[in-house]
Image (cartoon, rainbow, N blue to C red; front, side):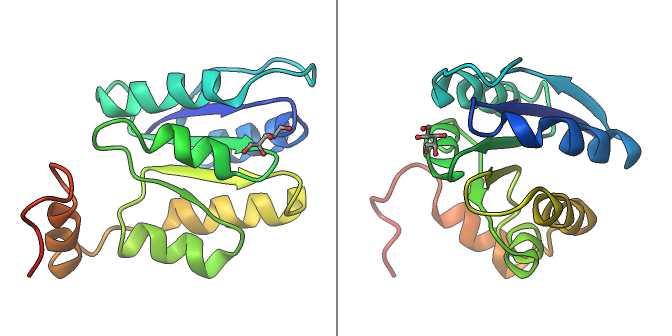
Length: 149
Ligand code: RB5
């Protein structure tokens, strides 16, 4: 698969390990920065990765900031991007199986690098189950109007 990776200054310390994990799992990875731990702004990297996923130039993304929250908020604004902030392996697996998450957001000030690698591994390993979960995703398309039932 084609993965995009992005981080801000707070997520930079996880970058090398996560890139290595993606590559050793056999994926093509596009590193979209940041390139140092110098202070920067997370939406720059969330926007780059999410835009590429939204436009189909990449299949999935991994984003790391201090909490993983800002990255998910920014990335989730793009059409067809399903960005989730995850801090445990169970949620990582379920976000793939039930939510078809295509952008994984991690918080480098919340979890350790070892946990981040385990979470990424768990996330990469799972497939979307489709069926009723696909119907629920469809219910979220086109805004909130007309989907109450
Ligand atoms: C940067 O200080 C921090 O706000 C950022 O990394 C992230 O946690 C935002 O959600």
